Image 1 (cartoon, rainbow, N blue to C red):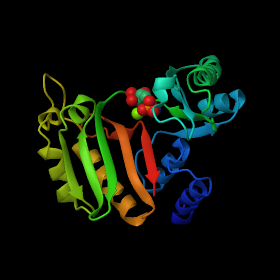
Image 2: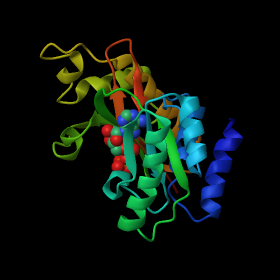
Image 3: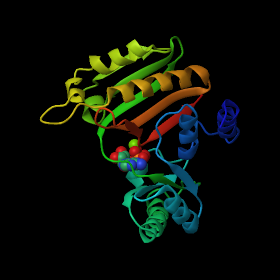
Image 4: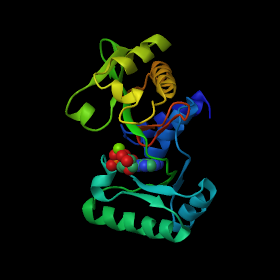
Length: 235
Ligand code: ADP
Ligand code: MG
């Protein structure tokens, strides 16, 4: 991958009139910026899905790839914890069936086969391009912390390592990352790294409007973090 191929992915989406990059396109862009994405591939048949799963290694997750579906789980478009080739082939067909029933008008480009990552503390790292200030970076804990409590920190890009660390430490729920009730501290260094790489990405690729990394599974200190779902919107 090169910056030219990132631009090509965006150019393709634009020429097809799409504002949302497809799942695998988003992961390719993120991977170019060395962000921690699970192994993945796009399958267009049961056989391709099984071959990809064997190459990636079990367990895997299957997800519908469609420009018309925003919340994949809502239409039965995500099936996790697949451990055998039989699981994969069944899940592949089930996703097409679910989507056919619950989103009959959605165009389906294929099925993403993705490495299943272990559960971790879920955080959200995102960016939105403000017409006045340019890209703004957001950090928060997943689930109710962002959606209900609006407990997030924000910075205007580009940001330094100190900004990134401050973003992580200034949310009200920051203590949760330190470890509580016998849990070990989480890998803040890995989160700092993701925030900085995201800042670089949105600085360099001006065509990007929003990036939403949600959830980012965060493991114990020293064990890193992995992006389990990503959305990239272009201008
Ligand atoms: P949606 O479009 O519904 O947000 P996601 O890709 O976020 O779909 O998948 C739904 C949920 O499935 C995620 O929030 C996460 O809990 C779980 N999940 C998705 N991908 C993975 C993965 N690669 N490894 C582990 N869990 C995953
Ligand atoms: Mg999601």
